Length: 316
Image (cartoon, rainbow, N blue to C red; front, side):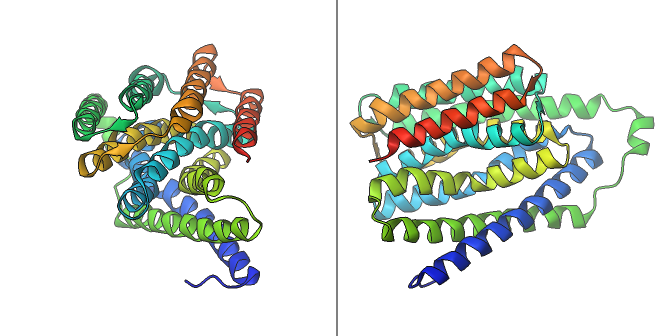
């Protein structure tokens, strides 16, 4: 789509926002109904199917960036996206409605999120993430998948015949809602990024700033839309599971795949600022989840303020 006038860019922003909302509604409704039909918790669906699906924009941006621009751009988008997932996505969701945290997510999935963040920083500290590093990340991804599948099997085997008889049947309409929601989220986020990128460029912001903010924020829009709608609908565990799962897939799957295809260069700026920021936000989330069984509105405010400070420090 050609971007020529501010009106076109504003229409892109409006259309992207509308698609994001519609896609999030479809995705959350379809995924929740499917979870009920197969006897899974919303948090499990959020940390697996939905998290992997909403990671698609990060994979697209990183692969495209690595092939056509630079691997550093893709890496910056991933790190920025993970920070946005914690600070903005969870923060805004908690401000709308306090988020109950699943013990399963905290005990089984959050450790993988921590390992993924530490691995990324450790492997990239020498300025390069190569093919061997990529294979290591993908191996940890396989281990995470095994843990999740075992949990799913335990949940399935624990369902009694009477409980199974009362469960609704899985419908093709629910699957279609999930697929349609994912497509709308990806397309909506792309429109928003295109419109926002052009407007900021016209306003005189640097390409680096636009890449680290609009690109990272844009690839987090599916998670933001899905998590906000989930919070509004009262599916709080879905929101937390979605963010934790997305942060795991962003590093282990996306960075892992890109690194196997082509070595990723890690600039001193990323090592000096974005890596420490990622670890700080990850530690903050763990502290908030450990402190209580929910992320309160006050916690949400802390996360959002932290993210705004991060963006302010990125300003040229």
